[in-house]
Amino acid sequence: MANDVSPDPLPTPVTEAGRDGLAALLARPDEAVVGLDFDGTLAPIVPDPDAARAHAGAVPALAALAPEVRSVAVVTGRPVEAAVRLGGFAGVAGLDHLVVLGHYGAERWDAATGAVSAPDPHPGVAAVRAALPEVIGGTADARGATIEDKGFAVAVHTRRAERPEEALRALREPLTDLAEGNGLVVEPGRLVLELRPPGMDKGVALTAYVHEVGARAVLYAGDDLGDLPAFAAVDKLRDEGLPGLLVCSGSTEVEELAARADLVVDGPSGVVELLSALAAQAAR
Image 1 (cartoon, helix red, strand yellow):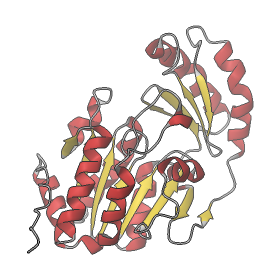
Image 2: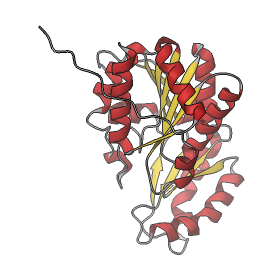
Image 3: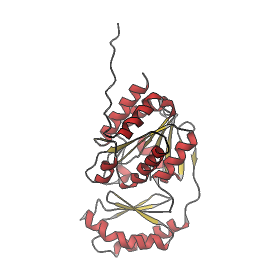
Image 4: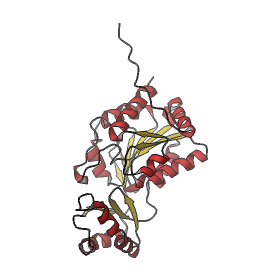
């Protein structure tokens, strides 16, 4: 006789709205969207963005959860090619219900077909890309800052600078001036400043996708300032009657996100544990 194994218990959200969101997700998982940031949520933060990889348990957890829900949406500022490659999402059984919304929704990759859709890039991105080395080189305290070309946006990381926080502060004004002069905006993050077209954020991408697939519950998990628009989007959806759960992939670097979350977990490992527990509960 086989032994019955109880699924891992789910943590309890600290807010009533969060508890309602979790209950709605578990009651009808096939009507729920699970939205997830990539860096810091599915993948540990590392000094070199190109060296990031999804947590070892992330893909198995997603493969268990995705068939139970309406969709899993990875919402990231990265190009979809990078997120799919670094996440190891391509060709995985069980991930047909997964999409990657890259460049804050400007690009989209569908695991079921492998198809990528994307608009033409904003012309200001090319101008900023060409000017950034000179701006960084001419900024005191910015030594060691690195440039990440995201195609539809450009990011300047200070994590590898000699004094990361000082470099971030020193670069904020010149990068803001550069962005505004080329029709772009600056989005701050964890030791990063990203220059990108206006109207591109995770909240816009998440809201549009929730409406597109007709979801009736939503979970969103993130770790950074760039996830605040997605948190705000879930708050707005809840005001409109759609239950939601906000999860912070715990970080002492971004206390504002933790303060707004219904549930705080221990970084990517905690996110994987949560996804695995959700999958087990949803499959019962």
